Length: 425
Image (cartoon, rainbow, N blue to C red):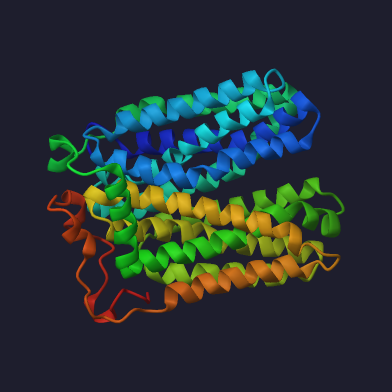
């Protein structure tokens, strides 16, 4: 751990920013409804903020990799996102909705900074030997945010107002600014010398490295399939609440159960970070999620709650494993874009799953759950399939002469060469 910047500074900043982000979605839904009297306004705002993340992620990742002081760039992105939320709130109902939606699209371009942007900087904060434990803690900030963010939005809206929920969410993001500003600076020579290629070339290089590095390609594809399934589950949760628990509002409680279970599981994982290899978790996690979704089709309250607890057991460690594989496989000079490209692709896959839920919803309870379970099974299969051992050289290492930083030399996640890509405990 560095003397200048501690792990707890990183975690406090990440938790505040991500909780504010998770809170902003429900808060915008409530604010849109309050300002216009139409639930469609809130849904349109949420969609606008989400849809542009896939475009902003790769570009922001390139800028992050190029920056000698990535913390300053991350600070600017967080501040921009918070300001955009404030502008959205101040224009709701006062200007044409199209203008407000355009502002929301601009805010969404910065959203990957709150996810992949933070996580890509973790190897600069802790020594390589501490990275597995730190990665588990980092994943816990997502679980904590998904557990508390929506609940906090509802609580603030009920006690104060819908507008207050948006104000609290942007305030939480602003609280993360000092932790972002003081992140360690880049040690790479390329960042100090300045860019020599176009942004488009660097974005393409990031996608190329992901595609040509088998563990990265499989982990990215598996996480996308899994996010399609998660999108179906979350969008279907109000229906589950209505049909099984007699209230659509109780469906949101199910999501809190998943988040709480994921947080508890990652807490245990942080205490025993070497229990299972991340490659093993990446295919076991989706199988646990698939099993949980099948249990949910029973349609009984006890079975449904048990299914959500089981889903958290699969979801929490899977996120930590995904981060671990990216840290292991991405060289320092490409790490920012690898993480932000991955975040953008996951958000897009999640949005696709949510969009599919409507057509899949029928009087029969099980069809969306079966579809979500099928996506999780495909995620497990996608990661478990190994590529030919030919040409195992790391393409990322050939993409640039920039040396990796000190965190890549003693890699705690390095696979045993006798096991190929490291599938197995």
